[in-house]
Length: 355
Image (cartoon, rainbow, N blue to C red):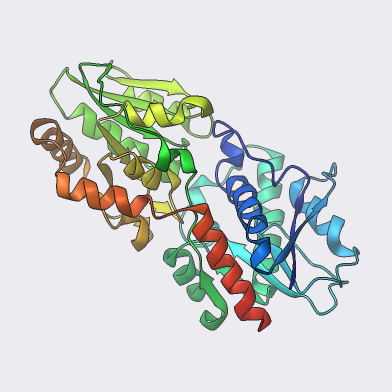
């Protein structure tokens, strides 16, 4: 069996966690390729098919770079990023695409960037082409049960969808957790972007409702998207601190410095920060009404409102995190490995190829 992973030059490089644009998909692509490569002894020959980054942009680079490329030597062509991909010379190859989410169809139209020509073009041309390419794929790998359900709702044949969850980096699983507290405050943490759908305002309002000077809220993320909106909302409360991008070389220590983690997103096709925080033994508070896949939200604490989130935080500060729940959540989070992701992806290849 010969498998070709298609992408643009640089797609399979390990990204810096502080580079928000490469936070999830590129991490998936680089880790999937390296983990599949390590499975070579068991059968699959996995090649990277990389095309040059053209001036037309990443989306069109893959589309034009592979449109007339001879890909007929492959049994399977896997598009792991869901960029537009319309191979004409694929021969017998089966095309499988990874679906990372359907937020632009169902959930977060208010997140669409219409402030620039580039943003308008991306959401009116590139994204529709990417979805069309996804729908034309012979099979789909969905990164979560939520993504699978959205794909079925979108009209894709449920019998051609396989769910393969992402993994998290080994450092979140293997690094020893320090028991020494470097601060006297009870520290709530958030690591992510400032998109509207992240719903950070819910957590800001929760902190503002707590009358306790010993509770602080550290918000980590690159100051882009709707950062100014959330910064204005937090104004006047010195306990809420915007820290900038989380440094890659200290990301584990950053998680470990928190006493609790909040991620009140309204939609998340997977949710790396949730699993990463739980792997570090943290209680994770999410928005009960947010659409987060069942396998990721399983051991989260679920807040119905800012007031309820404030109560959960105060209870954690007063009574601590239930040790039984902590152990279950931590062990569960550590089961999300890239090796497991690669093995399950390989099983998809075997199933669809009949080998």
